[in-house]
Image (cartoon, rainbow, N blue to C red; front, side, top):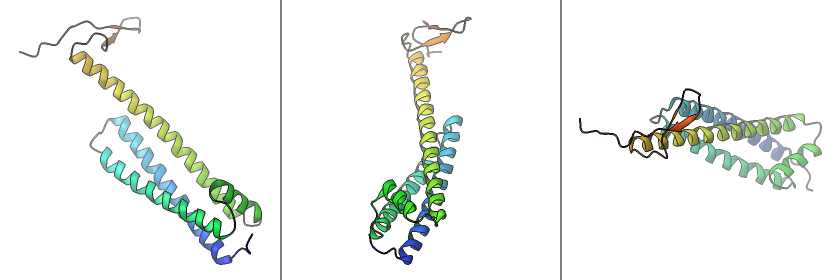
Length: 162
């Protein structure tokens, strides 16, 4: 392992701070996206997706920068490298704290993304049922009976020639 350069260590600290800040912004945008999905505000989605894509690109660039700095310091890339770096400098607790914050934010982002995916699936299922009902497809159309259970709704094709 090379002698740890104070300049590289400083650059790694700055890079991790930027990565944490970008991850916090990314989580914020994911939370906004989830609110948009809950409201069904399809007009707001494209702008949100653009912002999310830009942040994801920045996060990718920051991860590459972090990995390059770790390798210059003589450590492997990604999680094993930053964990080895932190273990090598136990007096520098700030690095371990930054890394823990990044991991927590990444975990939060993953969970928000999972829930948002479920919301999209639910909305698609609902839209499919509505479309089936409008087309008179009894197999895709169902209503709730008095007992709360779903039962086929056999209206046939809607007559739109009023």
